[in-house]
Length: 179
Image (cartoon, rainbow, N blue to C red; front, side):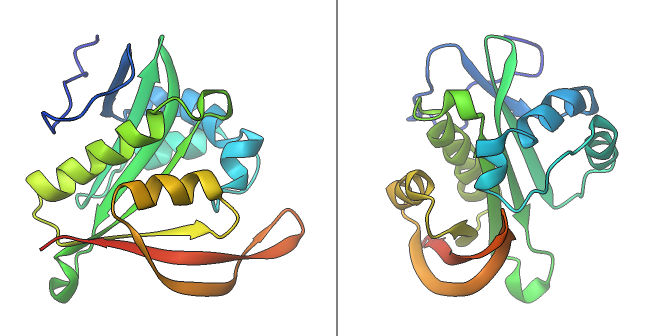
């Protein structure tokens, strides 16, 4: 465990053995670029191919004050990342959005659950967000199952949402509401 690591914010959370979740830093740029360039990771997101560490580093060096950017590490390797952004419009200040992905070789190991659980703990326990939104491609069954497990529901079907690998793909708009 490094100086940047901390235990889960939710005392009920159970992470896979050896997993740590922490804030992203500029020193992570090369590892995050490698993660984002994986074909499976990219296929499930709006990311385009061939991101460079310099592109990622610029983003990491100037984080928005309304966002929380996390990485999951296992055995010294970044195996996933997740971002939570709180909306700044005063009429939507109760709302945030999540985007995330997991390394191609580390899927179905509980890393996605740990990441989204930590982001939702920030949303619930520190920001008091009542609504958290996300968008997911309609053919991403593992992600849909994960989001449903955490209480997200489909609110809309977005036709021709993104262009991926030579064709348009639809997406679902999902949200989790908290009383």
